[in-house]
Length: 219
Picture 1 (cartoon, helix red, strand yellow):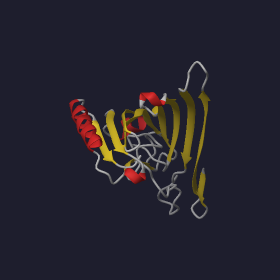
Picture 2: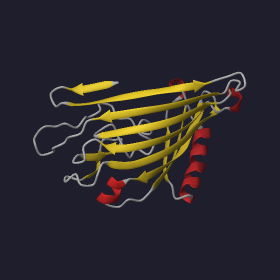
Picture 3: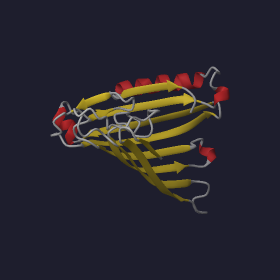
Picture 4: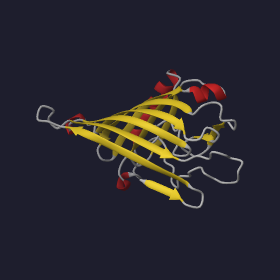
């Protein structure tokens, strides 16, 4: 995917690929190994009056640049390696995934932005480098009451890089995520299964001192 804004000279692209493993010995289980590289431009001189930072039209959280939302497709580069597992339907686990992301700023004088396109930090001198850090994501879906209630939950850990170290506090960050929902036709139905699971995961997250995000929605 490529988007460009000719008036400002900003733009971005994403390249992804992978290989799916399947065989008789694996039965109906499938594994997919993949990698993705996302690039978008930044502003090399915030004071020259030209806006070179790429602005994505539709930001999307908890997915493309990691489920922690500490990075975005704005003045950034993301190299991600992925392992997807598709077990047999009898396991009630339609999908599990492990991702590892490497984050860099494109322009060191421009800002570091989160998934909501809000600026987290900016070093106007450009002396803090451009390596923001890495993130490990582990997620899984479980069919509670297929197709009306499917739980998507996971854990993520952010490892700060030199840019974070040199611009302020640099604590590691943990996040626990759970979403519960179903197809559009079932989205308006009462879902006590989802509510109960979300409550239990909130308790686990608080005991582990893990930032927690719980959402009830279509997935």
